[in-house]
Image (cartoon, rainbow, N blue to C red):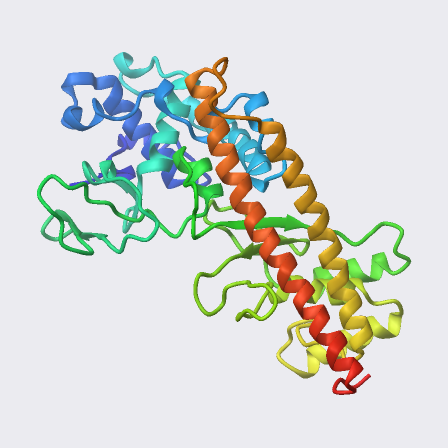
Length: 385
């Protein structure tokens, strides 16, 4: 039913240290099956998997192609993933020498291909990660509710459709509620209008801030724990993810519903706007007296609250300008002189940057509305200074 990492040859598995993850082990299993060719019990499945030159995951992009998405956090995440793949191959290479002689001709390029297949096709399971032939040939639809279920006792996997399908109609499933960033990095495709798009932004305490050392220390000691995203990359105290929720929590413009920006980002801005040691001490004291979360409540001084959010607004406005410039540099994807592969990847870059720009514009509109509302309340004397 499944190709899982527990199918790895025992003598090879014994030589791998604890830092080798399930995806890497599964990539070795798949490599062995590929090298076996028609002798593999999984040959009908393996033979239909995409070849190396048919994959468009970001790790296969050239430097010039990656430069197209430099403004997105996916650029750095791709660099980090490529570095990790290099380390993984060096870590497993000695173990590969213990494969049967006919299977030892595994190159780094072979490993990258197999690793990318696993990242784009494996399912989470009780065995860590598994390939489930032929379920992974179903294409992705971000709004589909069709699900894949596994019954390991009966050794059966089945897809439960989310609606009635006509004969010969393609059945779609949802790989996950993934943004274009994740789809590009792990799967090698994007959607023109992805309802799950998000943008990761980084904002730091300015080096010229006289309270910088104290602010950074407070953030590192009292801030939220790091959070892993869909790709396993950890956020830090100066990194934030903004999402558009197509529900009651959607970031909207003036007059719209919604809770707006992440509270962690707004808390960061409130700390950033502090001008005295006492301001910072008061925020730490407030956190200790309440739920422990730092600067989660609006500042009592409405002028400082407005200033804090104007700092965010300025930063996001700058990002919007930079994203617009990056999209403009892409030029038309259907230029006659552009080869098919470059045109495809240029379109993917456009989908990624456009989606993240849409989130930034929505965040900017929310911030302007919030600041305007506070100014109006202050003018009517309804906010305590």
